Every structure is written in C-alpha cells, then in structure tokens.
Image 1 (cartoon, rainbow, N blue to C red):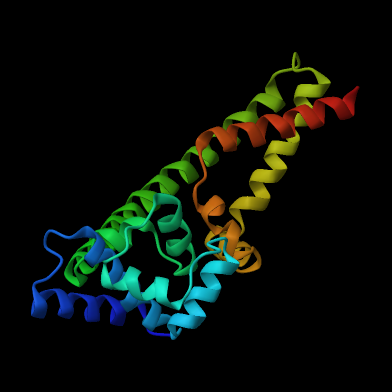
Image 2: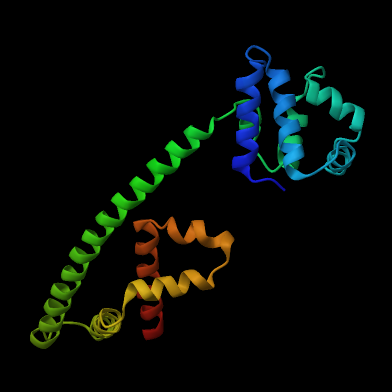
Length: 214
C-alpha cells in the first residue's frame, strides 16, 4: 500500500502535467479513484469485488474502468461507499488538496499545540498555587470553626487527603501512564475534556460521600 503522501504526489503530478479535470468533476473523481485504488495495491477486479461486498452489487471491473475514465456519473450513495472502501472522505476524492496545503495545515497545528502547551503550563502553575492556598485555608478553618457539621468535616478531610496525595505525585508522569494504558479509540475523549466534566466528577464524589453518611 502506498503512503497517503505518495498518492497525493502522484495525483498532483498528473494534474500539473496533463492539465485535465479543470472543468470536469467526473473526470477528476474518476482519476482520483484510480490513483487511490492503485495506492491500495488493488486490481480493478479486486476493487470491484470490495465495492460489491460493501453494497454496490452492480459494480464490475468494466464499471470501475468507466468510473475511472470519468465516463460514468456517480450517485452520492455510491460515492460514499467508494470513499469508505478507499478509506477516504468524499471531499478528499473530489477536491484535491495539494501537498503544500497539507504541510501548511500540519505547521499550523504544531504551532497551535505548542502555544497551548505554554498556556497549560502557566494554567497548571496557577492552579497548583491556588490548590496550596485553598488547602491551607481549609485546614485552618477545620481547626478554628466548631460549627462545621460532621459531614462537611469528613468531606473536607477527604479533600485535604486527596490534595496531599496529588501534590507529591508527578502528575505529568501520572497522565502519561494513563495515556499508555487506554485504547486508541479513547484518545480523543481523553484529550477532549471539559470543565463541565471535571465539575460533574467532583459533584459525583461529593454525592457518593454524602450517601455514605446516610
């Protein structure tokens, strides 16, 4: 199987050398399919069989030939199945992206990620200082305030114990270890956390502790 970059390079070269497809979306779509099919290492017969297995029952090698030549129009539902079999989006098959655009996108993503690293490091330092301050205030309150209920005191003591556990750990190492253990499919959810999720988790801990006191 050819790499995505090699497939894009070949498609780019064809566009530049032949100048075709400028006003013919069927021709472009067909040639794009051909390049990606060959990139997967499939013959027309193998590709036709995969399309039939995916639900396009009337697709045969001759159909693939007409499709790749741009002489057969493609329905939207057919295009969706073809794209899925080729492991690409419909958009990537009908709207060619030149390799330099992919590089620009990768550079922008890298630069943005680095900016977020700096921002998160600063946010982590502020949050760490806040946690120390809040722990000191809560500990002082527990010593001086006799009006605190038993339930509130228990929750406060648990929070302080959790604080002492967290601050002595290297949390970067902790989360990198967690990352290594999760499934690839769960990576997006792991990174895409929201403050709402954090609040919900905290509320669940408080509720569980309260239920334990009932």
